[in-house]
Length: 213
Image (tube, rainbow, N blue to C red):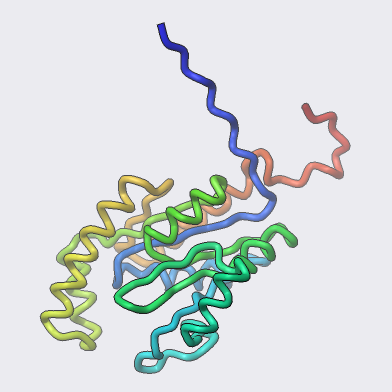
């Protein structure tokens, strides 16, 4: 007869680490910035990358654009909560956002792929992972084509990548939000954040003077 060891409870930090992932075109960045605007103490994590800016991308807003040497130095100083190489370029999320969310009991919002989200979840098990889904793959393709920025070949590759990313997110993330109507998806997202902030361990009970086990 074998016995299973009881799982230890996850110790929650006062601050909330929120990971949003989605295929390109599903609307995660729009939803992330809506959260940042509505929740006091929320901070959107602007990723660092070694790739050059595209189109109208702005340094410090869309990404922090740095050279490879600077990125390597940041790795050596342990400044990233997660980082990865994608198609010859490096991308990383600053650990400072995590530390700031703990200090002020705020919300650190990470807009990253499933690989990065899984890495954060591994380091911080109390992080909340939310995958944003399109209502259908046909609708996702329609949105990508409506941008009029990519060739047919690029869109086909994006759709293949999107299907793979969706399959990984559906199987591993805590919550799934379907973004059919943006306002409805945002209300669902806000509900998740409010629920997670009310979990035992994140609510400040010091003023009540209760005897805690």
